Image (tube, rainbow, N blue to C red):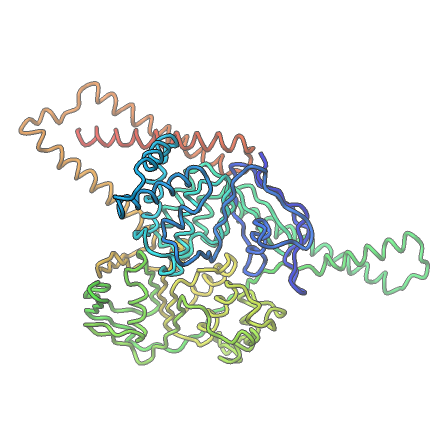
Length: 626
């Protein structure tokens, strides 16, 4: 069943063409990822879909009768209502009933003498009828998962990140048929991202998702749309499938372009002879020549140049932190933290929002003074600090002038250098864009320009605080290549698991209450270790609970004949269920299923996943008893 259809959409701003005559559809049950470079028109396309903008030509429509919800990249709400009032601002019967019940309940709590008891009883009956109690519990559960704990706090008192999380909660709670999300993982910590990933995987919904989080795309989406060179390309599989097929498409494109160039040389010779006879046949050949010329001149907007930046010389002493502590009011942010950095060290920092990650970076760079302890920086160390703040630059300046104000060129070693313009080209600012004014740039392009102003200063100790926010996947790949070859020290704070896994040697884990743990490995390795530890703790807890009941009889711990048979059977069943689960997931990500088959397979996957969890739990019980 088709939920959305776009036909021949075109859009341009001034002389910049975003896309031309693109067509695509999205069916019920599909979870689609939309990929494009910053400035290519992703957000514009979403705005056209949701009627916040209009195309130059073409049209698009949602299926009549379906509920559509849109999570904007930078959502806005009225400042006066509370969090819970904002969440309940919906016209569906279920949400309306919960909203009216909450209002009436507050009246009874504040003014019990004048409250309408009969109305409250009617609303309670309606809540029973609609099974709305589950909805109320679900609202509070989703808000809690997204770390929104004060439901009565006015929206105007929240930070930008908290507002984004309230908007995300509202979208999830509304239970729309079709959800559109623009960068949903921005402003979420790793724990929240993993929760959201799991949530979207389990829900039966239709989804269009714009995100730069490659693990998230790979896990959630079963189809990829790529907006590139003004066209739309469709890949019926997850992100890993997209990477393979995109490479095939680009290889085929390059081969066609090379063939066109070879043929163009022959046709150019014919054109130079200036045939006098203007027959129908020769006119057709001349027209074909101009088309061939256009084809041969086409280029893919890819950059493969490798840059190994020459940073300032490093002495023996890099950076030493000894017993560093910091409090804000009575909240302990960092407690007694010590560490000695070594040459070429690449460190990741992870932890929930508010645990002190940015505080530590500010103490290292001298923007903040610790309460106790010392920070000793080597004499040769030159910090480059990329913060989460937006770039502060005159909007009326040209992009190239922003970079040239720092340096006309950047040294890349062995006596070679890149001009400011060449450096911009490497990070996806083509020559035409370099002469644009900063005010014309998208949010992601401005952050990319801000990052380049940090890199252009040739630091030997780079500190990047959430560098991946609003950057497109192509830029992330370029940045990863650049940082892999960076000869100095590197600290990265990021919620992008793919980015961290590719770059860091070890991670500082901010556990809360001022505790910072150094883990020797990347984020995925840390996550696997934590999962194993949780299972062991659960086993120990169950053993402790069971021990008092056993008293002194060891025989009660032995399995009966029936339980032994059950344990053997469970091992076989679990193995079969795991295989079945993998096969179903492969089918879901294959892109070969119809919309009906997609829904059926999704239901089967949920049933198998639940049954596997039950079998594993029973196996654990019997194993412990044995």
